[in-house]
Length: 174
Image (tube, rainbow, N blue to C red; front, side, top):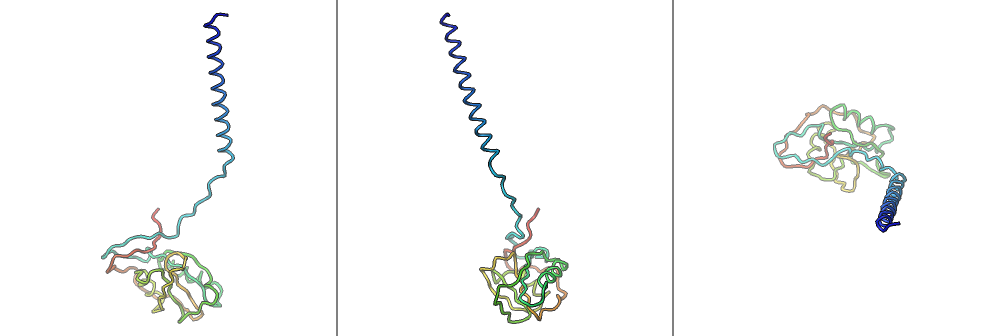
């Protein structure tokens, strides 16, 4: 054989070996991707911190309320949350109140920040119940804790005009 034929065959063999190596790397990478678990479903948050400025109107639909049941009345939290949603509030979570919860009235409003303006709107519907700061509370938005003497909601305004800048846990915008 001539020298140029040997060089061509050597070049062909090297090219085929490189292509085979690339193909094996591609198969290996592809197989690893197939075996990876699918990413888990991420649930949208119930509410997100939203900034409102002085003079803005805060509506009931901008306020997320969760309801805890501290009574012996089964389903009271769910019924109360449904009434709040019917009144226009954004629904948060329902649950039983932590064991040993003692209320100082028919209900309490638990907040992470005591100056939350959504409390004004909620208190117009549930009455002048105590507002208690609970920074460790992980429920979405403002938490209304209802007890055995809790009655029905009252009529109230659908919005308030803010006198200060505020951050409120409001439903996420789609």
